[in-house]
Length: 84
Image (cartoon, rainbow, N blue to C red; front, side):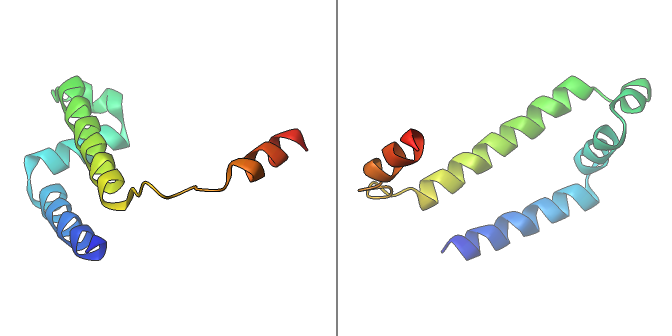
């Protein structure tokens, strides 16, 4: 299931970055933020959008991979690594 989610998200963002104004603005901001601002792009608005999308995708990754039993019985290994 994670592979299918990855493929869908990758396809959506490929289309969004290559064929929309949003994608052109994101590439412009990533190339040179100062020149993007001078050319009339609302840099702060697009940075908020980019970071919001990144946070949402991080949350999606955490939900799809998080398990409550991960890290069980690693307490002693962590203490030993810290004490060594």
